[in-house]
Amino acid sequence: MSQAIGKTARINQNGLTILVRVENAKLSYGSVRYLVTPVSGTGSVWVDAGRVSFENSQEKGNGQ
Image 1 (tube, rainbow, N blue to C red):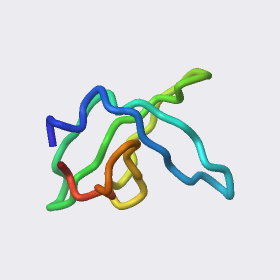
Image 2 (image 1 turned 135 degrees about the vertical axis):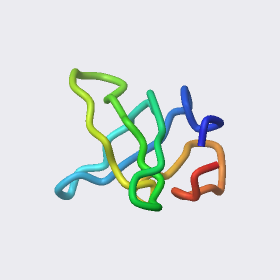
Image 3 (image 1 turned 90 degrees about the vertical axis):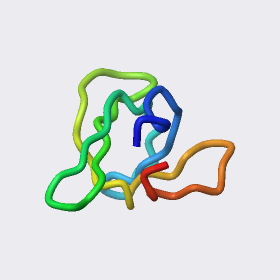
């Protein structure tokens, strides 16, 4: 999980694909969740790892 912190990723939010940065990670009720902030914009939100696609990688929300 900690390897994802600081990486750039994409998430889908209501039909939009948003470029985000992973700020933190946690295990919640057995599921990995990431705290993400937009690369351009403000705010942050916890999202399930399955919604996160990492840049320059073939990982997709597997907590690595």
